Image (tube, rainbow, N blue to C red):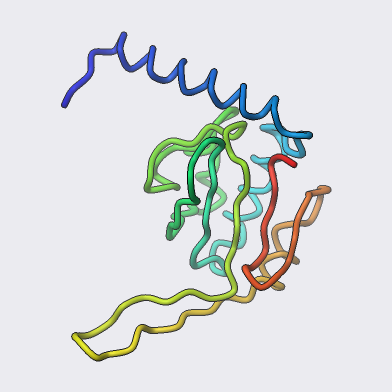
Length: 155
């Protein structure tokens, strides 16, 4: 189904209004567009450490799991704009920074393999090392728990 540009603009504006309403209902915002860009620049600089992350947008019923494609830092400005990031990074689509409720780097996750009866593969990433690498140069609202390292955009 194709939409004309005017319909797409109206859908985007309606979604943005809903996200602003949801953000206003929360107790506080921790992240500006500038802070998200700083965090994502650090992710690009340390992309070799990050295998999987979950991103929860305001109003979404659940987080989106993705194998992010952080580009080399030299290409940062091509895909991380002032207000959002290109779908090149986040395969699920364009993301506006102020719509991010949180991003999580899980300790572990499973992926299916083989045929019937073959147990899933358990994957791991070092979230302590990820946190030490990407949380420098700024104050972020985070938790480190059994789920992994979570960076919050809103309280």
